[in-house]
Image 1 (cartoon, rainbow, N blue to C red):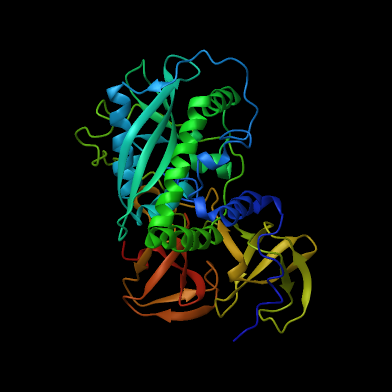
Image 2 (cartoon, rainbow, N blue to C red; image 1 turned 90 degrees about the horizontal axis):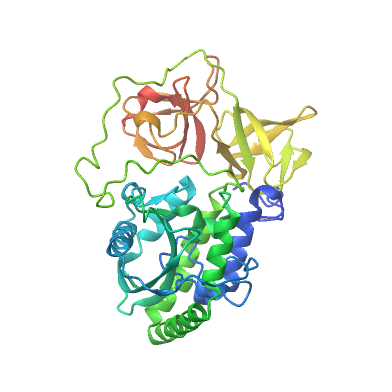
Length: 431
């Protein structure tokens, strides 16, 4: 067995690229006994009420003034939207959730699928609301109980939504203010709305409600050992393992989104699941296209002279560094990368995450998604590059399952199989 300890000097250091992920993991580790009470739990299972007393939910300074009225929600459309959201979340149905809440980042979508697998149902106890920055929006807190698969006792919790469209008639959840984005900081938010939400969370009524739900949650954990183990061990471990496999966005501008596709009944209209097929595929496959691949390091790691831990280190790369992938070694275990003008060498694939770029068509127009597990439709060679003169890593027999890493416009897919990484033609995949 190859000893990798020399290359993995320090997981989760303070580099900029992984900073948000590290902070989220540290928060989970310190506060894991409170981890489920946050409601819809799209925030790495971090709780809403635990942050109160430390600067409010968002940890930002609240502005003066408190004229908006806090009351139990009476708006039936708001209630329906929230119920639809929870129904979809419990099923891990990201497609339907996207009809109710936008934008949902790719990382949040993956998290929803992960966490939805543990949930059996949500029970909405009460909904409280207050006007947002204008008459078209509102801040909403939902008191819920979460029923998990295989556990009798329900977990009490609170969740927050910022809802828009009260006057236009097309309601949706502005997901820039989800618990997930709050903790990861993937997308930039608007300071005016941040201040409005902060005031809402710092109201005396809210603090009293948060303390009440926290007490109920602690009682539930003490009452049911299965619930305690599920939350503090099973889910906590699953979330941490998932976080080890992703690179979070960093304070990016949110994608443009249009809510015109949301129907009046909040996504339950005719044809919702049957979008119109495009007349032609706008993606052009160009076999001659030279692809420049990039990867991000997941830890501080040595750059070696050859594809082995026995080869001498010729440099070192910090966690979160962006490198150019020049080729895969002929055994499919290491990548030959260019760090800068003066440094080229080998880094083990375990410490690299392939990055998307403008030549990627992963998940577009019916092409395979990242992490899709797909069988090859014919005997095919797994190659160490996307060039005709590349070397064969191994021969894959028909039916062999591979995991998709990236799909490119030149007709190649980067895949992993049995610990090896390489390239094969898209046409050889059964999808």
